[in-house]
Amino acid sequence: MKKKLRVLILTGSGHLGWSKHFINVLYGKEFINLHIIRLNQPNGQLSNLSAFYKMIDKLNIEKLLRKRTVDLMLNLLYEQHDLYFDDIINSFYVHVPYRGGDHPITYYKPHIGKLINIPLKCYDYHILKRKNIFVFCNSFATYSNWFRFNVPGEIIYYPFDYDKYFIDPHKINIAVSIGVFSRFKMHEVTMQIAKLVKNVKFFVIGALNDPKYFEYLRKMKPSNVTLIPNASEELKIKILSKAKFYVHSRPAEGLGVANLEGMAAGAVPIVIDSGAFKEIVNPSIGFRWKTPEEAAEKISFLLEHPSLWQRLSNNAVQKVKMFSPEMFEERIKRGFDKLFSIYFA
Image: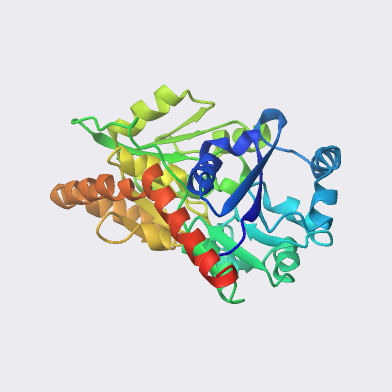
């Protein structure tokens, strides 16, 4: 590589927790001239595209890109913002998809009792128009959307801070499910599972995003389910420490950080057979299911075989360490090595 590469990183206040790892990998490299633009995002994210466009206009990023003063642009903002750059970007483009899932994206519909497929979102196709693109994905489930179009990329698995979780030595028959109280998290499926395993206490924990949906769940939940909206981090970790199981019903997760929380606390994952769970949860640490009935059977089976449950729990705690920040940076480095060898050798 004869000349220095001019690299622009576009990030925001809502993503500094993990985007710093991308910066760590690139900072100080002799062949890279690094330029970082941070957008100040209210409430941690840009809630609408018009606000995003106004910020971009103020920073004259369009002028910067049109003049070809950037060799490589790394966008660490939400996917929808990529549409803005369709017609103006001349530099090499690095995309970091947030959304995961199978391809096509798979959703479980409880009222018809089966999985249905949803096509890729429109902005994915906009990005695919480009020839000079590389993607960093949080799982193979996410990358599969790009792999079929021969888009080069690297699977990096977003970092997870597992050190703050602990395991109560006296675990009890508790199952935990974590996710915002919003319809797309499909907590009603977890309710169906709970109805079939009445000797297990279920705790559903999440931010209260949709009060009407929360009220719907409150009225339909069985007696062995407790809903905890807006729980403190301390309370969530304490409940997880006592739980034997982590249950997740929302399909097409790009990684499923809540599942990692359960694993770190020694809760055996009982998760829907979809998205990144297919590559993370195997028979050595837990079970995947296709129907609520199957999930209930797995929980009951493990209650009858405590030695097997203990082995799976121990393995889950060990496996979660592969998502450490250090491993995250190693995978980012491997991805950039691949990118540079393909396009800038």
